[in-house]
Length: 373
Ligand SMILES: Nc1ncnc2c1ncn2[C@@H]1O[C@H](COP(=O)(O)OC(=O)CCCC[C@@H]2CCSS2)[C@@H](O)[C@H]1O
Image 1 (tube, rainbow, N blue to C red):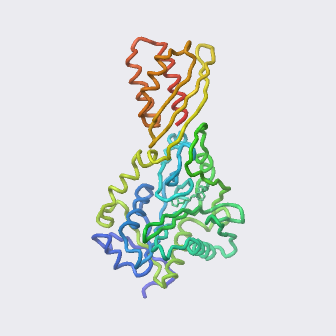
Image 2: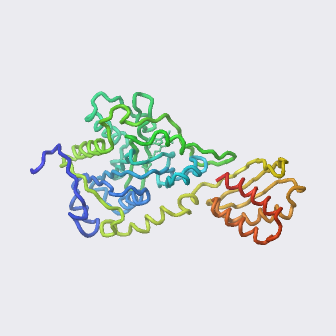
């Protein structure tokens, strides 16, 4: 043996193994450890889909380690407008992704590790995986106080959440994935996970907010790199194997044949926003125009992320019923998205090229719409 069983080895899969991922079979005995070379959430979620759909998880288990650049990840059945501050995220360039597993919304950045445990459905055991993570953390800091909860969170010092769990069960295979906060931006996290949008009525899955803390706060040695290596070592002990991490490039079609359409689907508006369970928006607002305050009300139904119906109530002495219903009608069918609303209103304004009054009023109403997104 060229390296000690405790020394972790990282190898780059494409160098070792050209050709299709069926060859993972020859690399893997019982447990295979993969680490993503990408910090793109859509690519990493697509690797999860690919492993779930294509690997023989009856014969071997897989641990996938990955990190993302700043991203908010919502659960499969959630409403992003209820869960996060989309406006702030657009301003800061924070990505939004919808995953295939259920559960709540979490924030990721390079200070957060994601661990996906793939097994056959028979071997699926979230507590066992979380205990493995605890053993890994204790191998680095023996006195660290980390515990599991009934919700499969990991708590530090009995009160701070450092890990959240979600899972997806297929017919014969399953995966459990969890986060691990090592050194994430803890001041940005609560800001992006706060929704400023009110008046949304929905049956979508709500998140369960907790106090969070980074593991590096408990001890500076708990960096992402150290924790990932420790988890990989514990995982390989489980399979009595050499601790080898295979570094993979998710965009490598030779390694993951057919992954490109999976990545593309996860990036689409129709997946990220369009899969939001149907919801209603009801909002009263005030418009200040020529030193008078005008009271208004908007009611909308949103289905598949698109405005299915829209009713705008404004005093008819301020905006004529005709102008009000023209605006309403043009919005029906549109995506519930600021860019599309601005485009539609701009197009509508062209039908009244010389009417400054209608222009001003429609623009003021448009601002109120956009503030809801
Ligand atoms: N990164 C991270 N880790 C742990 N806890 C977090 C994180 N970000 C936010 N939170 C806290 O958890 C709640 C939401 O808790 P809730 O229990 O509602 O949801 C979850 O935990 C989902 C975990 C999903 C894990 C997947 C693994 C790979 S892709 S995402 C949120 O309001 C914050 O208080």
